Length: 379
Image (cartoon, rainbow, N blue to C red; front, side, top):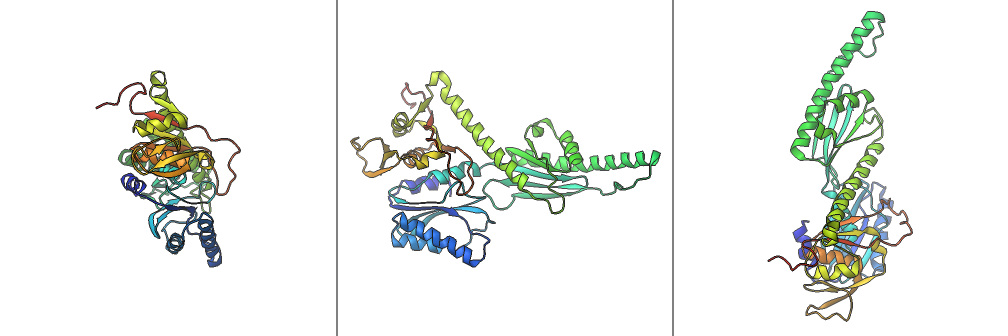
């Protein structure tokens, strides 16, 4: 679903039932049935009506096309699934279920911030390479290329003396020529797709030769993995971890840039904390809202409004728009940001599924503003 379509949904009345769960598993049927039963019990405990529960059960009977593990976000209203999004990779933290006047948004936005990131994975060896263009959240590569180089390198000949040195030079020449082909493939992908980073794994010597042959701009994107994942029976876990770390680095870099811009002009372009940000969202002044994902467990509440200005701090605030009720602060802020065209960055601790969240209060939200706080809005 596009940002425009999500904005349209959030502007419409609820109540909404939300489920943030694992995608279909590769477990035997009893295990998959237990997963569906747990989801049903979760939305029942959240207070969802029977029509919404039935809609979620029906949706869980349909596949998503993604390999396990994957993550699924379901948004249901009046017995109809309005949003069913799946993401490759495991859940971020615990499963969550909610029923209320506005959707639970923070888990969805945590994934959405990352799914736009594309990258290249190169698994290289002396006789060629496998090169893939991938995108976070997608189950299959957007593009995959097998580079089949020359195998006539005679690596096992042990003739000794002058012959051994000649054979070794020949092998190096073949390996180097093979990596020329790999480098050309990688450079074309980088030029065409503009990935955020390039993960390189494989044989040590092949990696060295490849990196030497890449241009400076591409070398600046490289995340090198000290593992020969192209070898028979090798695990790709090290590559998966490198990708995960690089994605978080990209999100952190975007956050740092937004924070730097917010601090410019003696902090006139930024706002800090719920109390300061809420009236700025009411004026559609926020360009980028940064939320710590730990806010999902905060007990702080804000008033959600059915129309513009979409959010208010207290029950006693008077607006022409109808109040939808007191809702979780993170969801209220995120909803108002989306409805006013702001970007929402969700950052925080990396969590495995069901991993306990660190015992700390959430960091206060930060906003980068469209115009300085002490100026009138541009016409």
